[in-house]
Length: 292
Length: 246
Image: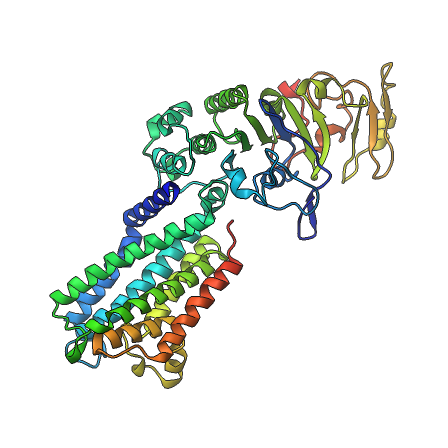
């Protein structure tokens, strides 16, 4: 559990990432993704529960852990007056056996702006430099907080290719995203969290085809029109719908259609997973892809 | 050693290539020295102002580097998330701090060399009739304590305030301590109550120690040592307790 004052940011969340796998923490802004990743990176102590990275406690064994992990923060983290080449060379000297900074610059496609101060790089270039900085120490575990946020489409391809290549090298990649499509595209394993709690876990394919007990449960804080659920047309054979009441979870059983969160009941007015997960100012987490 | 050396080189390069820092740490002190030794408007109590100005401006130089340059730079690094990001590298906080301290001492050596050279060129006669040779050690000791004290004050502000607020407060404090620190204006020219308050500040203790050792050829007073040591212990302690890395 992670608290900020009286606010519980993360609670009852449990998952394991594996070498050679990409694990995505998927959830809307404020779901507790960053708090979770930062507890793995050793930035904050958990108030209860346990966190292990490569078998070590990232808080207590901080010095041993930081040499073996690569970290990409959601924002900033770079001297604004230094250029990519300078920053990468500096960071490479922190590690015993670093990557070659020049090769890394070319890998992330920043060769042409190697001397441009960080503050004059575009948002996408800054993100790619952050990614290069996460890679420079040849980490065994990579933590990427929203690695494709604010990155132009071309840059996204670069970032995705690098993540896949790291996975294929046997690196454990843990990333956060609020974009469903990114999680589906990048991850071998997806952990969906909201309000600091785990809602579902599994491979994108498994999550899309069914949840553990074949049902999708959800609840909302503001309440939805449960009467609308009651008057739904009779569900197809093998599916049932239990609107519940009050603040209790509503429950639906059956096989959601293809695509994460594309649940059979998404036509429910004002309800559905997408309503529950709508991220303020961001893309709705559970929104169906392709606008179909 | 490799991470420390790399960090030290980066810190020095950033200090040396930052125009504001160079102006603050070298430009302002040299301009003050040249201007006020040529234009006798300060109540230095001597008809050879450079003898008063060199020690006072050396104290000013220590303050500008250890408090202002360190405080503003560190505040912005904190605001940009640099300090946070470095926390997830093997560099570690002790080596980051060590690199910053050594970089500051390096800047101070450059400042001292420039100011002493300009001072001699302007006819500075250190130590008065007795000469200052024997007291140089005490002067350096006072400057080291001053560096620790001012560095601690800079880090207290950098570690707790937002970068732009920090920028304003550090600069404001710089001006207040410049006026009340006896660096350009002797404390005897202040109202008695204000002088009594000012005597408890690290700025006045350092400038008094340097005026004595390098100007008049007299030893550092017990009060100056006590004030300097107290600030050199208290300020870094408070910084250590209050500093927020992000």
